[in-house]
Amino acid sequence: MKNKIALGGLSAVAVLLISCAVYTAPTREETLQVVKSSFKERGIAKLDRLNQSDLQVACSEASVTGKDLPQEARTRLERQALATVKYPADGQYLGDFKQGERIAQTGVGMQWSDSDKTVAGGNCYACHEISPQEIAYGNIGPSLKGYRKLRGASPAVMTYTWGKLWNSHAYNACSQMPRYGDANILTNAQLKDLMALLLDPDSPVNK
Amino acid sequence: MADPMRIRATEQPDGVDVRVLMSHEMETGQRRDSAGKIVPAHYISNVTVSHNGKQVLSAEWGPAVAKNPYLQFKFKGGKKGDKLTVTWVDNKGDTRTDEATIS
Amino acid sequence: MKAITRAALGVAAFALSCTAAFGQKDTADAIARYRQLLQDGNPAELVAARGEALWKEKRGPKNASLEQCDLGLGAGVVKGAYAQMPRYFADADQVMDFEGRVVHCMVTLQGFDYATVTKSPYSGTGQRQTEIEALAAYGVELSRGVPVNIPQSHPKEQASYDRGKQLFYMRAGPYDFSCATCHGVTGQRIRLQDLPNIAANKEDAQRAFTTWPAYRVSQGTLRSMQWRLNDCFRQQRWPEPVFASPATVDLITFLGVNANGAKMDSPSIKR
Image (cartoon, each protein chain N blue to C red):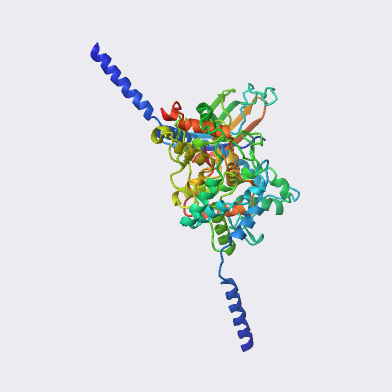
């Protein structure tokens, strides 16, 4: 009788121990495993898009923990991003601002619903106020209205603006803005048209 | 049988408020499909509503009414617990009848 | 005459300055009023009615209805079930969201083939609803007014939340977008579409979770939560999420838990 009770007590304790096992959160690797096995390629969107760059990893970590990147990491990433910028060989920065407006209004490109022939747009109005005539603009990025009026068009402004379009992380390590040049989203000609939209004195942006 | 409709009927101080949402393509017969062919007309042509067996609304519709028609009207003489019957017939002869209780 | 002309000019000048001020707020208000008017007579009700018929109809190789499907509150209990999903299911030993669980029941109770059922889960613009969409509309309609109560008692439910949170902040693809890019800051909008901060703003998360599935006016069809995630990833330039895959369930758990307490108000109507 005593043995039976003792055994019963032991197994009860065992059950308690097992069900009270401490919960451990999944590691980053475990989560990545689950993510990668939950997606499939479609159209031009291949699975290699889930392979994160160092910058993507660093910035993802910073936002999930809510802690800013340490200064050292930020400076390093910005320097690396700046090194990727390819300035126009002919030294000409400004294209056609009317084309630039069209590029800013267009949001397609690189989705699985697009093809590799689709001419991408910048989708700039998704996040920015640009021409005063366009009232349907987002607020994720700062207003670009009066861009040239506020900054002038010195060589420094030209290279900064081009660099920002090419790889926004050159000036803000974890910028949310896509890398229009570095990721081959827009062509050089398109980037020049966007430059004109911002920096041509005749552009509606600067009127 | 065609898709069910949703009927809501509530007794108000000035009559019974009836709201009916019908499921129907209401194709006008003017549209063309991607191949360029006319999509044939397919729309509700008649609607009748009866209260305790007596007709309280009769309507003749045409292609001007939009897809999934929403009908709202009031009638006097009904009270909570009474039965309402809604019937539609379309130009192809298809029909649907649903009932609801006034709440 | 002169006085009148001057007055007229003054009024004209005032009117011109007013038209310049007619910007976001009026547009946004007008859109909101338009949506409000559409609430009555929401076509989603018709979709839910079809879903109810599908739930009760004997179908599939096993010629059975879905009325024995256990959505977490016991076999056949649909009322209130949507509001407590995703949750852990012992018979499948995994956390499942509503749509995935319904498909699970279509396979186990009715004998349908999983690949066939999930091949095209979303209708095209203006097309007739798919079965999954109709069942989702029915399920969520029966949770209308029920407070969201996504459980976090089982370790797999907790793991789902934590993975969902990590995935939410994961930046990837050629545009470096994560969910947080759009949905991680309060007060953001793309063009004129306000974006809820699903991660850190309780009210935003609640409004977002309680209003899906919804009838999407611009597409003329009902859209479910699985569809919403699918279309987000498309615009993030990511590859496509597999229907009801673990990653999608994890994200829905993350969003749902963040929304706990608010009353479900779905199917709703959206732009």
